Length: 135
Length: 293
Image 1: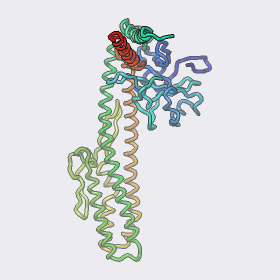
Image 2 (image 1 turned 90 degrees about the vertical axis):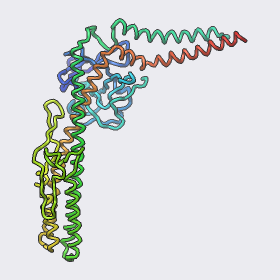
Image 3 (image 1 turned 120 degrees about the vertical axis):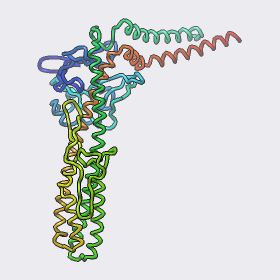
Image 4 (image 1 turned 180 degrees about the vertical axis):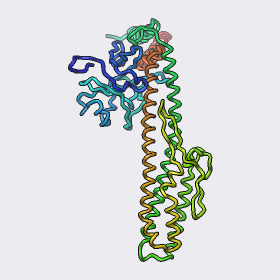
């Protein structure tokens, strides 16, 4: 996955607001996990020991009919979905030890400008504990 | 080509072995410390982990406080809305009473209706949340801070705001005080109207239409302000909740045992392994039975 910026290709994105819980981290890189496709690692470039497993949101079919708040799209300079890319953050559910995705608070990216943000949605059908079936 | 029991057994054993091999790969990686989920082999900084765990606990406390604040505000908003409905009903009565065809007999009926509205309003101003009077300022243990004696209303609460900390360096006022309610002229206008009806005072009856409109506007303003506070609280709640989920995602990433288990679950190898095992035991039983025949 790359951004097409004027300075060339990069898997690094700037997060002006950081991420909730990590507000001081303003830049993250998306790294492939070769032995573990299709998952990727979202890693802070300032503090490389801060990382989370993420998944391309388009693999989940939950965002197709979801409209993203206009003010959030504006913050990232997104007029439409052309340069929009969505990722969800995974965690391991305590009791079941299964991966669950936070589809209620996805990361949205502008692949042209290289900026990203985690946003919080309130569409029905989105959940903090979205169970992954085999993709 | 005839399929022999031997071939069936060999295939099944191959399946079992490949499933077991896959599981072994994950176990080995766990054992050698090489992690699928980390790019660097640096040891985990457990002081950092502990500080993140403390943040999660602190956030959970904020979330509990936020839940209570929302409950307090919701009861306040509902009470204000119902007060406003009472005011609008009173205004409708004022409209009817202002008609030239009305007589004292009609006014007496309306007077009783307004009396009911006043008593309902007093009841609403004395609403509680978890035993606390919500419109008594910080004197929340004052039962019935508003008392009506048919000509006036007395208030024994105070004018103080209840401030709640909902996040680091972030406080919000969660109450409407009794003073703010009294300042809408809620009671004075209703009582004046009631007395005008008792006395057949047409001029005051007619003035009551606009006066009650103004009261309604003032009560609506209080409702909107509190509604804005509620939105701030909800936004903060969403942010803190998301922060905790992100922190938990980061911590998930550190626990090798959990990660290996989650991967195993995800790949469903265990299911495949069990299925293969089950099929094999059936095949073996068949062979033994054949042998015994």
